[in-house]
Image (cartoon, rainbow, N blue to C red; front, side, top):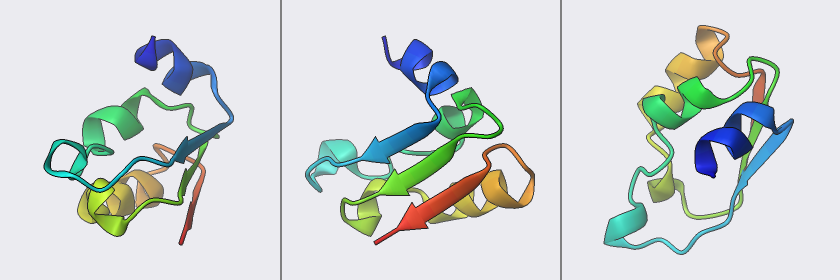
Length: 69
């Protein structure tokens, strides 16, 4: 399931279509389920990520790093 995937993965890669249902799908809740050393990579459109939540997750050490297109 998604919670297990997030909590056990070293890398989480977002590669979904940009639609209303995926708008800001990666947010504080999902970042909070990732490993503190986890690396988030977004190869989708920026709209799929809540940018403020990503900034907070990075600056507070919730996740280790991010790679953005």
